[in-house]
Figure 1: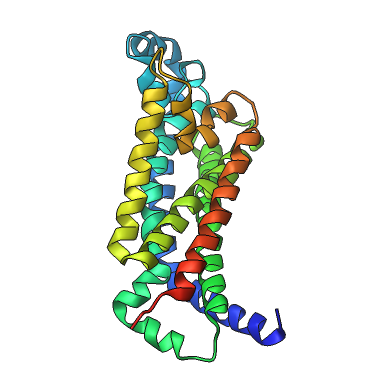
Figure 2: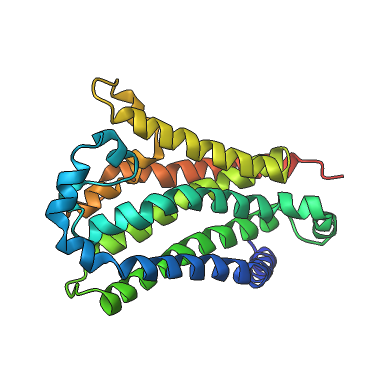
Length: 273
């Protein structure tokens, strides 16, 4: 990669960062506000842990598995975040990430600005690398900021003093990789067809993953079902029980790499006229 290519990638990357930061900050602030609201109720819930376990124990265990909840950790800050925040973020986040990914290139095609970009003395490799890199950067930063806000609100609004740093670090990394998969799906399908298709593909993958996770928790279900869900590779229940994510998390960056390469192959040969 020569200096000219590096400079072009840097310029497009910087432009993407400037163009997307307001939308990302709205997303982050919305979830930070949700986190703050939830933390207001944690101490009350933790004090009623035994009563809650008695009530929830009558419900199907598959329901708790589907929403990344473990009755044993429901009264801990980790279990509370899993059930109240991450269960929602792992459903809404993929749709937002797919929408974000579909904006990177397919969005410019829809608006007509892709034509201007393609006639510039910039290779498609440079354009694609810069745009996808900016998208991945925002996935990691957005999830990092949401988790950082959750740590701050945990300290300010609850009686929890011993912050489980390993848990928050694991969630930040895992959630960022999980979101990046959907970002790249939205990007790839958007280039292949159109922007709305990228969003629908991300939503469809999320629904499939959630359903597979739910089915895998049902007794006597064939074991292979759990491998069909991205929830298995980003297992937040492990984190809430003091474990690490494990080697299975490595499949997510592998999937991301495949999606990046496939996306570029499609973009390189795509006729945007």
